[in-house]
Image (cartoon, rainbow, N blue to C red):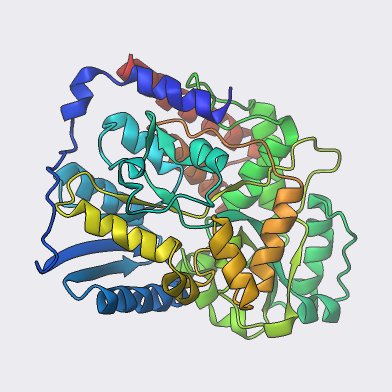
Length: 437
């Protein structure tokens, strides 16, 4: 089923009662041109993103002296829970940076949670945004609930010098077996060094991708069933576990000290960690200079689905509780469509999702070569789009918890872990489905 059709089905499933559900809907209030107003903007990111966004806010406030933007920012870890709690309590920021997979859950709980950007096209210029891209990822219940900050794609970022010193060579096509066999060379040469710098993202960028490449399917189907078998889970778990057992990946207990900010590990800048599987929007989190290279994303040999995710890096939405929606939309237009905002933000949220901004940055040499190359590589062979099945965060959390226990040796076998994961996910999905009926 297509992502668009899935979203339409979600819309039909929402009952009339949900329109006044757990999330409140505010009343639009237009500010006079000289009225001093304040808007809150909440986002997550790296130090580089924070600095660029703060500079963008300062420039916007200078051009609009009656508008103050209060910045609320931090790391990714725990961000979703904080936003969910704020939305439940009606204390959310006026402008919110959101991860794309969360939108299906939020909008299924209340279809009127965010403003429809298309109601403000006299303020926000939607020209040069791909209509298909907006429809595929930002339209829910026939409403454009936000704008994509950029195009995010899986990236395999590596340090060329470290690879060469360890004698690692990759061909134009890199398999997951290559990652394992070649990656062992880093730790073998120096027991303090590792090939992959990963935190719990290993489960998403390795394990789940392995499953998608294996069966060209989904972890969770849109009918609330598990999309993989126990046998397939066992195989994916075995691969992931051997990456840790044979020290291809940095030890889990060490990496989790830097959860959500892998590049804060001192080893990253000390040339002790050779590569990273992550998002194209994160490639600025390294100081490798010319040593930083983007390689083809690793894939199972013979896989028909590359498993490479291409989607918005984030979506910026305006809460329906915002008392000054026109001013909030004016800020979105400044960020994404006005030259000054575009040139300040550059590619801090990956390669821009609208043609004008992308061309402007390219003309001024302000798009990272690595970010641009990673998006280009991903667009050559994107994977089947992931389904955003509402209210299933608990399922993926259970999946990751089983993986964590497996890595720590708390199962006798990968088979036992696979059976536990399958049973837990099945039970949770059955409960979710029953609650929605």
